[in-house]
Image (tube, rainbow, N blue to C red; front, side):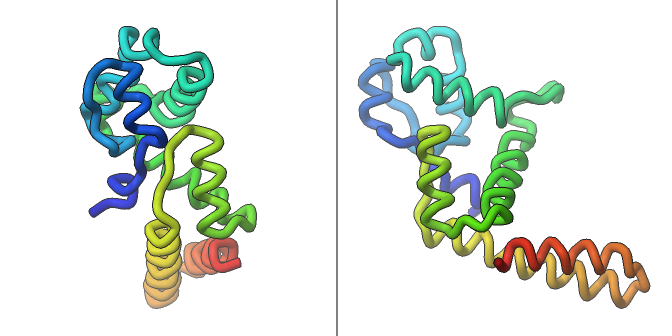
Length: 151
C-alpha cells in the first residue's frame, strides 16, 4: 500500500454531511478528488474547510498532465512535502499536526515513521549503488539527503 493511500480526510463525516453524500476517507481516492474538487462540492462547504481544500488543490493538484489529478503528480508532491517537513527537523507527530493544520488531512504517526524510514533506506541503497558505479556526485547527494532525513 502506498504512503498516500494512508492519508485521510480529517472530519470525514462532517464533510460528508455538508456535501450530502458519502465520500471515501482517503484524501487521494479518486471519488474524494472528484467530489471535493468539483464546483458543486466546494460550494456546499463552510469557508474554513473550503479554504483548506483549495490550498490542498493549489499545492498538490496543480500540474499540466492530461490525466490530472489521476496522473500521480499529487501523490508525488505530497510525499515531497512530507520529506521537506522532515528535513526542517519535524518528527512524525509534528508532521501529522502540520499536515492536519495546513490541509485538513491526517495520517497515523506510525505510517509517517514507516514512510520516512523507507525513504532513508532507499537513499542508503542509492548511495551504495552510486558508489559501486563510480558516480561520486550522486553518492554524495544521496548521503546529504539521508542526513537531512535522519536528523
